[in-house]
Length: 196
Image 1 (cartoon, one colour):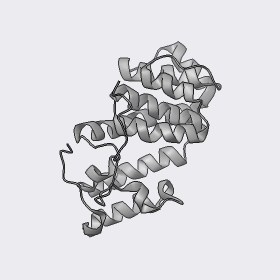
Image 2: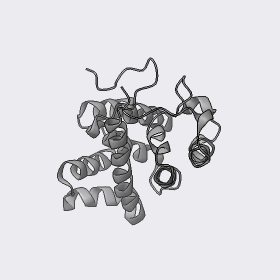
Image 3: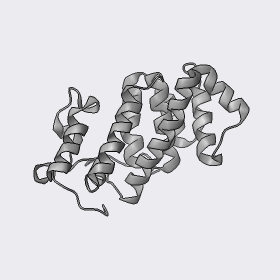
């Protein structure tokens, strides 16, 4: 049960409406109808409804997420791999569900997505899969990475890509915390990816 009121997009304050417009009409909303962002009651899905309750913070958060997703130096497949690794670590149902779909659409091997979901080591379906997975998992479990793990990821991503990866991990930890703490539900009819 959500712990914070769900706000229908047709009843927002001007500040909340500006945030909703930035989310749904910015880079993440390109060629997507508003219905892909909302529940049947007209409230925003994912972390966005909680952020409407603090629109100034929400605006900065969504802008950082937009930048990390659409302006990053990381290949899209490895970016989405990192995101689902964070979602799996947090068991953030909505986060994993949403970005597993994006990962598959970007061309990530379904076996990789399933291995991340179950906590197994993924096959090296493309260069960097195991390096990025190890980097994210070490960051989240140890709060740092070994020289070997750093070198493997850095060898794939370079300086900027590695900075983007660290920033991505931090951002999606915030997103996952938002989803879990406010008990943001899955879209109607979608099961939890971690139910079994």
